[in-house]
Length: 173
Image (cartoon, rainbow, N blue to C red; front, side, top):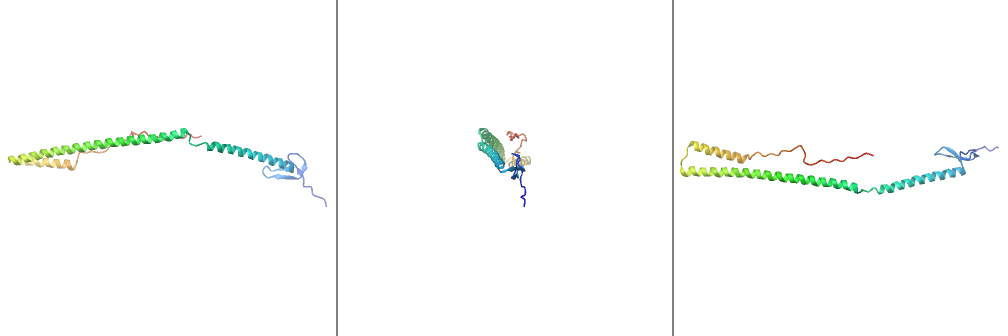
């Protein structure tokens, strides 16, 4: 029985030999050239691994640098400055409201004391008429209204911010 020829042409040495198919490149290699082909693939893999390791090292060094920390510090400083401005504005507004309320109380108290003196005077002198009584009644009503409805104080919010807004701009690579 004749032996079947199972030899094919090697892509490297161009000799008719027993060859092995490389699944990656779909080429036939003799055993010697297949070994050399595998060595080249291994060398290429090692180059890729070296490139990877170099990149990994550089990537590992990409810790926040002084510029990154400076940006965070700037944001923190903006936050503290803004809070300080808000606290100062709130303190000023509280002081103004307190002063206005105190002025209102003082005015009402002065009117109340003045009315008290007038009442005493009318009572002591026993000299009054309907006009005087209407006047006293109206004054008492005014003082009550002022006490029940203190001066109109309201808060006005300005839509123009006194705090500088910040935003982050990322430059795409």
